[in-house]
Length: 433
Image (cartoon, rainbow, N blue to C red; front, side, top):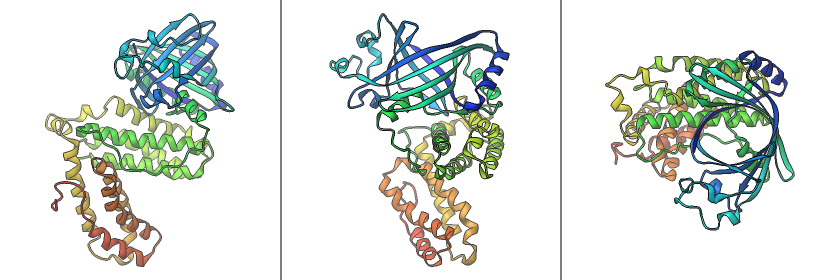
């Protein structure tokens, strides 16, 4: 087993030569482009995908390798996951050669070999550079070709930085330098993820509003904060991909994702001091300015400030960049129950909303819209331990109030305000339960 650590970027097609020339100034260890053919396998019922496993055979110049990638962690395009590689004499699966630890139940399912079939392929040329950065050895691969499933296909133009030895922070440091070229954007969709989408019919990807954040049972506060920020970053990258593919309605969701990042930093601000996230917040401001201006998706996605903001957040999450700012008094609070923290914060948010809207505000309702948006987003970040129906029943009148204020629907404003103030809390320790 190897632990794969790599950071993926999409390369602007017009910037490929700029990138190649820059990489050639960093090292003399260059390997010319060579063709790679990859066949990915799956069962009819997506058994591998449902277990977060990916199976492929790769062919390079008459040599073959079978690979199984299993569940790991993906943050903003940085992939950290175990993979198992087996050399083959010919391009035929030999699942029994994988160690038992690969399989969910500790052994190869009896009928799996007979059920897996080729699902999609990727065919691309890979050009490589080997770079020494800090204490680390990093392989940079430029891949150009296509992913194909049946009649559906789409181009591949990607850059991958893989840590061969050393430290993850050196990969991130090198990445900050490369995004300064303004030809890269972090890619959260792997070749395999795109192949699966094509194989399932290549349906148009839908714009998705922010929703209640699922929270892991027995998570601590630090894990809850990380989950909130990872969720927002994933939302940003997903809708950036939609926007650059021509869906203009995805653009507001990118702004919503950045707002959620800010809300999460504020929500956990009592534990993580502002100076810990100062650089990140400054870069978010610059990214917001770019996105708010009348620019195209292409310009915004490859903008240096936007790319640096996403990469800084990725680095902050992966390297736990807040930890150097945490004192001995605060550390136990971060290690405390996220569920307990959520209940306390939900009560505080509800109290703030009730105070702000306790009385009719006449012409001053619009002044409260930023507070209302922030507090409702905080609820969605904290409510994941409770049944969705109960959460939605509490949220709906407040969301109705927000929409009525935004559209200046005076009659509906008072109706939703009264309904929201009388909504029963769904969380524990609210004073009513």
